[in-house]
Length: 329
Length: 128
Image (cartoon, rainbow over all chains, first blue to last red):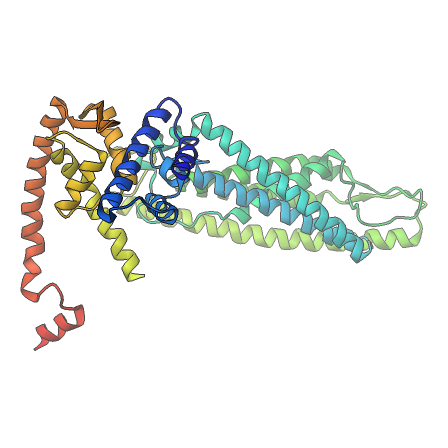
């Protein structure tokens, strides 16, 4: 009897309050009936190992109690893909940021061991913090009803006929890194170029062309993040996304053109030593190369978006059932 | 893997029928243990962790009437069909008959090959 009571107590502890006593009494009655049946069959009382075996066939107290409760989720199925995606972006951004920091620190002449120690200790703490915060945020959103809302707010009209390639979490991680880095540079928090050690007292400042273009670049980086969000979560707005990408690439090319025309890129005092002048010249070459490469990549993207847009528009005109946002069947 | 898959599919196949069997058995009053035994005697073994929560669910849905009564100096929870339960059971039985007829028609089509023949045996048979 002691074993039976212990078993029932363990089950009852996990049962929903309000029904606890009644359910436990019913389970108790079922178990006593089974013991009684077995004893009648064997013509003797059950031994302790036999009672243990019988209770084990009834199931673990947690399993028994769980069969009386509704299935519970930490994060509901409708919110789970968004949570998982957010987690990948957040952790990806974290990893990328640490990688960029490590490379920058090494380029600035920091000791390898020190950089690795700093990176790994920081990476562990920050990653755990981000995972915890993301999970907690998803939990709060779910409890606030966002999961239920998402499960009801979808429409078949937003589903694509043919699955399209969507931006991966790494794309969003890069977007975030670019936005954070550009914002830090534009606000002056991250001096340009931060990793170079200048002679003491020497001031090399980025010219006004960076402050003018920097704000536009931050806005364009945010715009790209928004475009990627729409591309990922509302893929049916394909024409809008491709048009936005086309405009975005054109805007980037204009900013690059403005940067090329806006030289000099650095302001250095007249009395600068030759070594500083050499470094600035090298930087100019690096920036010029970067701008040329950037312009080439952006042009390819522009051409790609244009081609895709034409293809989608042609498919729309020839396919009567091509999905359109808000289209009724 | 195949056994596990079979077991999962078998449970899935049985799950829907169990409610019908329980409702049918509860046209006469039973408590959990005797109900389980009656179903087992008819060839339908049901796990306690499935049966007891199901009884409570059906009771909360108004399909069963549950009463606590003393029998053999022990308090037992007896269940029987309510009037709603009886009406619903009649509809479910009709549905089951119709489903059974359709399934018999669909599944019975392949009967000529024999249920124990493997796919390769059937292929060899049709090739010959």
